[in-house]
Image (cartoon, rainbow over all chains, first blue to last red; front, top):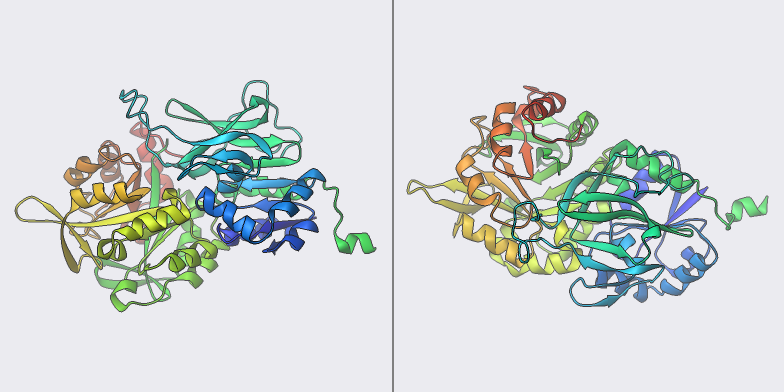
Length: 227
Length: 250
């Protein structure tokens, strides 16, 4: 049972690694393509701007390895910016192409001040703080990394952009922010993402990391394979 | 969104310290131990402020951040002596979630924009340290209130947001450590006026002080003395806020 955390020059690697360590999931860091190719499970963490994130992955030659891993069904979890990178594109500081694992676009959360200036429609951006996770109607968290999470659980968000999934079925959990319904967690095949930071969401968040660490993987570690 | 209750820990060297108006510091102990206790009690975030870093041009507190992130799984904002993109990167990689800029941003406002475009605006907190003047204006200071900038605090706050600040931390230096309550007039002037979250700090002595400030529409309140000297627990403060119909994370 191990998770490889992708180092692409941005992101809070340390927090994710410490979170995994806290729940007993073995973890290593991959700052190149080879580490991704041999991974059982992958986490794409993220703090930073979208374009810098894609540039960091590209510079390290990690994108083809990521595509190959996803095609092989290796579980991949994107966190915050890492989740946004899973989508087709983002409009953060210009229009940028993403990894395209989940159809949809990343757009800025509207403040509501321009079009509809009513107090109810106005929200502050970035969306910073603790918000509750809800399952969209008809969605079930069973079998996902949220299987052990209670609906209404608190998670910590800090972001100015939101992912809008083209297929609503890809939205695993949502949160409400003023008039907005924001995709808090997404899942498409073996690719998942959380807009919030599980590694900063206390015990509930750590349990999500533990669940992801136990997700079935088609790749067996070298040690296991050798036995 | 629930109001965030945020213990603020002033750091000097390896120690948590506390002063009054950011002077006359007392050593209280290991910051990481305090942070871990606060997180366990329900702190919504933690702020570390290295209060002598910019004074001595010293390097950041990355080692302490790294040690803290091993045991604290709520967000951590780190400030003090941050002068470059590399400084920010070092702190984020050590486990910080946001950085708090003041002196470097005043000296070179474009630094705010550079930090925001590199790490995202949500990562960049700008501290507005103020002292209310005899003529009723609030002026901005740096170096924990030691260095006047000549900037009007309200103008500087708005400018910082335009430049890319994702959050403002308003510190009333003349209230800080006094436990006389927040500077409500200053908070009222800015809390709802900028489109980014606003966290107020300086002067909290009781749950009543928190309630009064929360009603002005701030997004977070930073607290130090009340918690460090165990005048109230985070649980008790949150209970009091909830009883006053202010939403908090249970």
